[in-house]
Image (cartoon, rainbow, N blue to C red):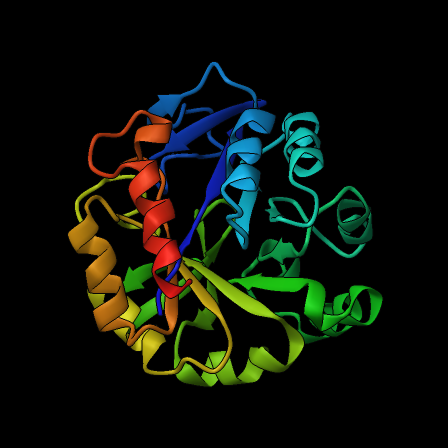
Length: 256
């Protein structure tokens, strides 16, 4: 059964919703759908009060550590943390209250070559049960390719069943943003969800484009109930108009 998983995206210390792929290193500002006046801890408190587990906090660039720590302290053990996580700081973020750390860029070199030894070293340090591998991707003619550095740099790694089989022994879950539809509120990448759902060996959370309850149903149907979903820009909690937070809490309650 597909579950809603909450998210808190942080940019420059504030909770924001940003169009995927618009955050760049060339000085151009990202396209922002929502900037909250509320602190990260307020959102984490909502998720705690509604017993929403398995959500994530993503630090989009520098200047977000304080806000991230606030969120983790508000819902200790209830949120994962990603953004700039590597072997040297992963344990620190787990100690700060994260249930898992989420890693992408630290597993690749500057040219996008996958570093198997870096993955092994990280797992030896924190354990596979504390690791989420982020395979967020861009659409390519051949399928989907993992993108690093805030989805700016394509890597050599394809998002296919062979990759999932290769990496699953080293992590507890996968997180996969469809960067080409992230933040656009124009619908999910149903082909990607179906591709992930047809594998379904460990938990996978999909993010990108969900704008209505029909999109959540499509994730459940296309993903055969094996893929969870997170919602950002379309959620009323973040200023969106397509999905109501209380409805998603109720959606999760279906299994109870």
